[in-house]
Length: 334
Image 1 (tube, one colour):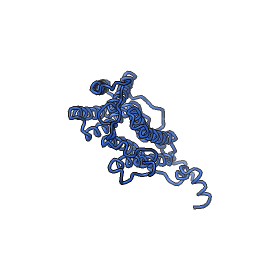
Image 2: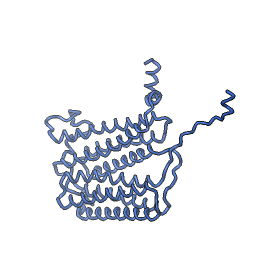
Image 3: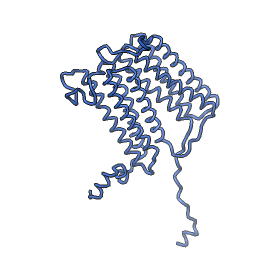
Image 4: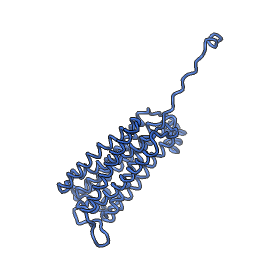
């Protein structure tokens, strides 16, 4: 490597790599999918921190203790769990970095995909800081809820980026009518409300995230009615299920393309599974394993809804140009 190469790599490493490497379309798609999968993994492991009472396993931030950057043997199991989850943030950053490098090196360069990648990176940075605040304020349930909601925003960006890797850059062309699109947006809005109320159920529920007595969500000096909030969450879940079934019925009635139908069917099946887990965990006093499964289900429901939204339009891939045919007269003149 020459001195000029070193200077160029230091000045703009992404452009330097892009000049020397062109990934296949499948490599790009896999890199972006990996960032989406890793985002879901870190949501579930974050839930494991709470469910094992390890939320303050590292009692400070950004170091694990005032004296140590890492967990120590004296901190035991909870310190290992909390510090391990913090380390997974670096893994997530590395996976997102790989996705950014892959989309930046693709030919032709699709600037919109690179922006999605950087949006993921900065959301992770913001959520890392928020996670530190969660620790510093002693697992205040409102900050914990905000931490999960920001992770949901990260999942949304990662899902959109994954979808865009399988599309072209042409203007989107709708595949369904306006009324169907409006129904999907209502479904999306209710799902957002469902997820938000789910964080309230968590914040008012028994799993505080630490072995000590962590205050739960309240209204003034009065704690929230956990049973009432849980029932509201269940009602919203049934509304989402009903809207999804209605959407599937409407799409069948208007003979919609296969894409929206398939994504709606997938969402309906995920909702049924998630609802089953939710009811079982409620009637079995919230066992930790089922709560973790429900958190994973929440991620999958959100991804499913977003895939339904993104299936309502298409961005055709550019067709490869056919070589210009040369007639016999031109050949004879050569």
